Length: 302
Image (cartoon, rainbow, N blue to C red; front, side, top):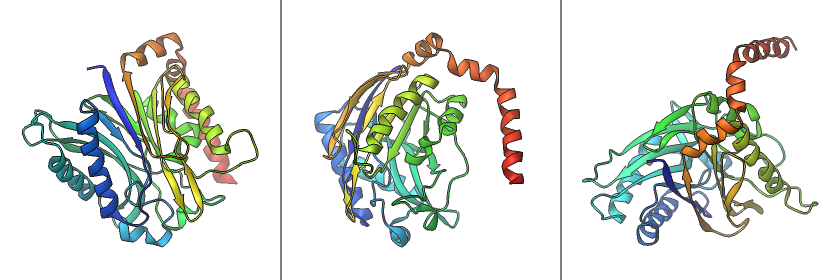
């Protein structure tokens, strides 16, 4: 199967209420079953099970990834009754893992008990770059992840990066080198820089996402939170960008909505053959790594 039917649900979570937000996801299961039963992957934003600006409240809503997965599987089986029903899901949450709190996102497969598809928790990404500028202060309340990984799904090899992770170009390069063909990006991006024609962070994402896609020949799927927390408004704008850097669809910058798209994994090979930037990097990777080592030594000396 090379074609994948995606649904991105940009929603406004209820701040600090894990169970309430979990039920909202369950409602999405019911809605997709009724309106879009052939959806393959449901993608939700960063911290969608709690809201983003929680500060010390993180400890009240943080859950082990296994607990979140078990809750999702239980609710999926309660809401969806087709014997063959199955759905992959990408979802952001605050995680309790190994005695620390993280801003994380999981990828899981959900399936009915009699489905031929095996359910399971496939991957957890812990946000690597924690912003500490402007309205952000994540490092005070969560630990940072230490790895970038690509992982196998029933729809090909994928990766997850969370919001700030993609503002550092090395992150998407690493997961592309590790084989990712689809990059999922859960985000909670508050609006800022209101002096230009477009809101500053939206304008930057509209440059950044196509650049990531075209440089690496990769599908980019961005899911943005909406709503307000403490006077700060999140800017939604969920979108899907093809491996040539063309945006197929983009959601509202302020309203809840479900954004849908069908993507074809075969486009990755075509795009990479047409513009072999990733292959050029792979051919020169040894020298690139050597230069990074030199740069790291300089940073450490300083």
